[in-house]
Image (cartoon, rainbow, N blue to C red; front, side):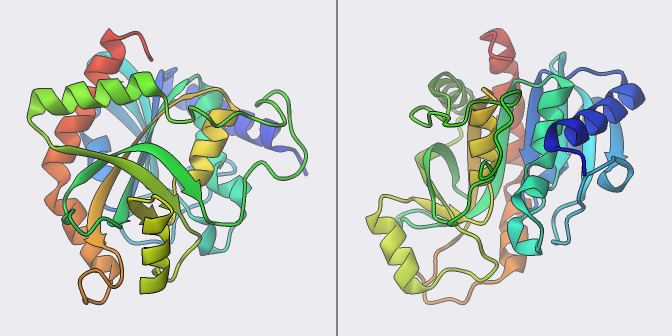
Length: 279
C-alpha cells in the first residue's frame, strides 16, 4: 500500500492536470455551508468519486465535490462537504482532502463547520471565530509513522489558529456589520449528540461550541505549516440548554438561514487575506 504522501500527491496531480489551477487558499465547507463554493468564479467542479483516494461523505448537507476557481482574483480550492471519522473511516481518510489541497499548493486554509452552542447566551445563527480548540475525540491523525515531508514529529499547537487571520476575520465582519462571536471549539467523535452532562462539562472546560469535525483537520494543517482560520455556525444550543431534542435537520435549516451572511463574510475574508499577503 502506498503511503499518504504518494496517495495525496497523486490526487493533487490529478486535480491540477484537470483544472490547471494552483490554489493559494483552501476551504473546507461544513454541514449545509457548501453553497459558497457555487459562487466561486470560473469554477471547475470535480466529484470526490472521480479523484483517486478521496472518500465520499454519507451525511446529508455534504455535496462531495472539490471546487476550483478564483475569488477576488485569488486562486482557491474548496471541499464542498467533508467526511467524518464517525462514518466508519480512518482519520487518514478524514484529512486526505486537506493534504491533497496542500499538495496542490494551498498554504492557507479556512475551516468551517456547523456546531452546537455551549454558551446559553448565544442563539442559533450566531457565527463564531475559532480562537482555539479542545480535542475530545481521543484520536489524532498524526498517530503512527511521521513523514517529515509533511511536518515534524511533534508540531507545536500554541498558535494553531493563526492570529493574523483572526484579525482579518474580525475586520471583515466589522466591514459587513456581522456579529462575530469568538470562542473555543470542542471536537468530539460523534455521531451521537452530547449529553446534558457532557455539555456542562465542556462549558466548564472553557468550550464555547461543540462539533464532530474540524479538530483533525486543524491538527494536520498545523503539522503542514498552514495558516489556519476557523468559522463555526452555531446551529443549535447544546443538549440540556433548551430542553429541546436535537436533530440534524435543524442543523441544515439554520445553516441555510445563515447562508447569505456566511457567504458575504467568506468573500470579505478572502479579499482581506489577499490584501494582507496571507495567501
